[in-house]
Length: 256
Image 1 (cartoon, rainbow, N blue to C red):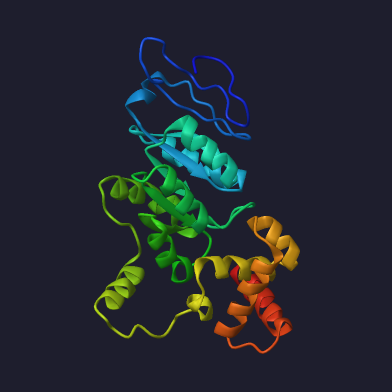
Image 2 (image 1 turned 180 degrees about the vertical axis):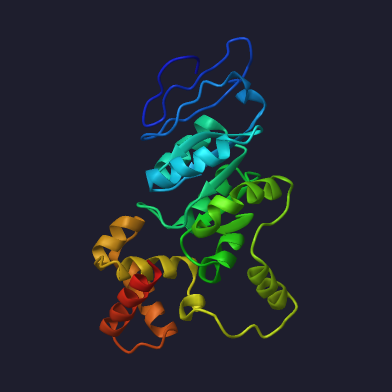
């Protein structure tokens, strides 16, 4: 590729002509930080995927204070994330669950298809009781809430890089009970019975999108969305689509 500009949102990829690969990668996407630190070549590179620029900047400030860590790229949606994975070659990705153009769980699956060995840490505003297990099943190696990010993000990153799984004691206990065949009841969400795709459709309906708008967002047909809606309605024991829609709206508002 060489020095110079790259098409799209990814730009300014520096390549040292003396080496077959860049000595430092940095995918600059929509206001991302640019670094000129020569010592970055020895650091572990992180990609931040979050649709809030303030959150990305705050995380970058925390991470870049560590002597062995550096944010090599930022992305605000799935399209940018895929481009940054190719351009910046991160050692670990930190991904939000709620993005503008896709459901974070689906993005995790996509990134794992592209880079099967890439460690992914989920950083979300949502409680792990709803998304923690789903994120791990999708291929993530850890789950951290944004409320705890400033205190625990570095520890979570380091533990995942060591090959460990990072979750709270509460989620770890719940997973152990499930593996052991225990009857883990209480505190569960009514939408736990939904598949990842059904939950995505449920949330989009709860945001006020029509069936056609959901179909366009997910790149599927309206009939497919209607089929998902019918399955959701049956699983949640609603008789009409109107009842389901009211519940979806209320549930989505509570999650914000």
